[in-house]
Image 1: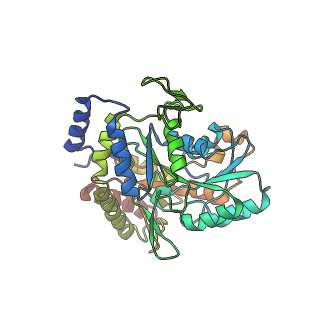
Image 2: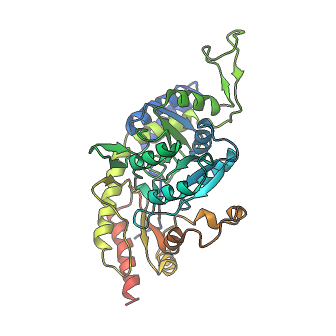
Image 3: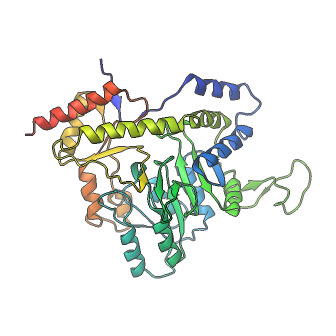
Length: 388
């Protein structure tokens, strides 16, 4: 019998549990050696030089924007189709958000429209760009880097959906999402529905050593004990607060779970791609469904499998009656009451708004069984047969 099927779900193994138990029995529950081990393992997996583990993906965004020296009142460009934190982090730092519409095929930020916007704005108004690898589709950071360099902007890649995703650059090399080849920094989330789950948790990756050192201080109240950075040294107890930071630390308990989860991250990624291929094959030409776009220049990470249909609400409600709990990703940020106080309104980004009216995320997680996949597909086909 098919039980309730959510759109996303964590997978905790006995090895994960034992890893956490070992830390619980150790001397450190937080600020211990397991955190650095997790950072090093994650950096190696992503292909970056450095990684800084933090409390969650939102904390990662906030600290990264601060470390990149966003001045108050300056603008940062991002997409309206993402979780609110991708934009909120700019406001946390005193900046202003500038939205750009999405590409109708990839659902990620439209790079051509970024260039068009920047030509209209004053040269000193904008400081950076936060692209989002929506659903696991990699933004071409090489193309975006060319624009950023032309206007003197930093790039912060929101890769929460895309560990293991990659795009092929102009030289034919595969560039892993978040590896820092073309961005100043990237961020990841370890929320339970993500590829790697630690309950809550996040990571910032970068190839910039100065940025790395700054991030480590910012995540722990702006305090350092590093003798090389201290203005004086009073003794072994001495530390200094050198900037206004935050308590955005992750615990050793979470880091241990992260290390364990990371060991089978590739296995989970392969399974996600297998599930996607079944959906792509079986839902082709079903009703008016538009399937997610892909091509041979990208490796999709499939955090989400997003379809579009004019019957989105009806299908959503029908599937719930069948114990299939899909989700919508995302409501355009510029339509929220909070953001409308800044002058944003419906009609500003027609591609994003059209996408929102039709998008639906189907169940996508590594432990989704073949029987469950077949059941989801059967129910979707049954729904559309009644529409004929």
